[in-house]
Amino acid sequence: MKLRTKFLVCFLTAAICLLLPPVGTGDARTTKTPFGTGADAGSGLLKYRDACVAVRVLFISGDFFKELRQRKTLNGVEFSGKKQKTIYVNFPDQLVVDLEAIAFRCGSKPAEVLLPNRSEQEMSPPEYTVGLMAKPSFELAWKRGDEKRPVALGATQEYHYPAGMRWSYVLNVPSAAVPLTESLEIDMSLRSGVCRLHMTANLDRRVSRLVHSTCD
Image (cartoon, one colour):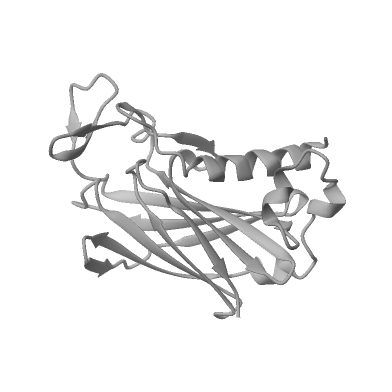
């Protein structure tokens, strides 16, 4: 199996694993990226014609999430440092949100992309996927219960890795005094609204967060 195919299988497997809520105390599930160590916070999957796009959401802020642990208490989820001597209540003042996207040809049964006998040609997305993924727009809001607070986005950067049909959309999100238990609602619009993907990103790993979406 070629390197590109292996990467795609690993990426999709990681997205599916977000559905499996761990039990008890543990480190935040983290991933190393070019922008820092990110905590896996959610994922989404959209289909446009014969192209499927898997999106993973990562929260990044220096080494903050690398050292973060969470455990269930009688009062809900509690976050602490690795040695559990420091209790954390809020996010750092500034948060980098990395949306990692990878496109593949999904056909009628997207789950079959994980089968070992799929060739690279079968998995490669259609050429029009490049235009679909270019210059998306985003709307974000912090959510606590039924309350939503729109986020004024800072700088947004887009990175395209053609060899693996991968994209990274890096968003600078103000998060001062935002509790770690809150969720970040993300609305991603592709090709001027032809495709829309709504994702809920949070650190509570007990919650299943894989969202499916289709396009007009």
